[in-house]
Length: 104
Image 1: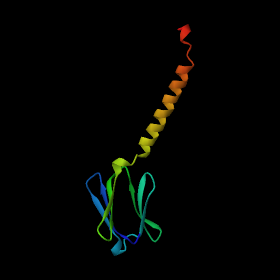
Image 2: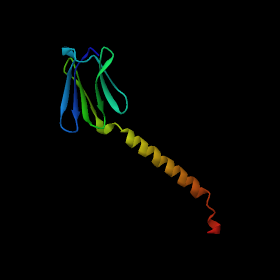
Image 3: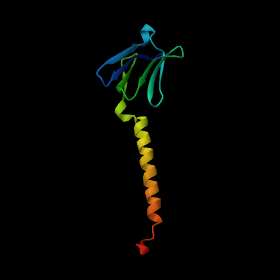
Image 4: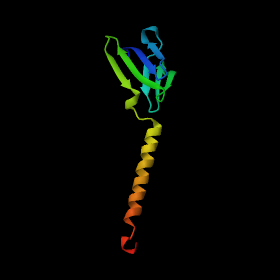
């Protein structure tokens, strides 16, 4: 991660956290589904729920940026709602196929 200089985490409430690698504040990061984790020497030094994050910008040492918007990352609630919707659709389709319409 030495090629990266800063991480800017913008929260939906309007606050922004800036992590500076050159100051030794972090040396690694990862995205683990519902959270974004900032690490230093293998320890977690920052953890952000993606439900509260508006965007994450990782600046390279040369000034280039990589931006991730939380809007493009499905939340666990969205994934659960989608799974439930698919299950309901499958059950309705199964029930509809077993109806004998001649006897109605």
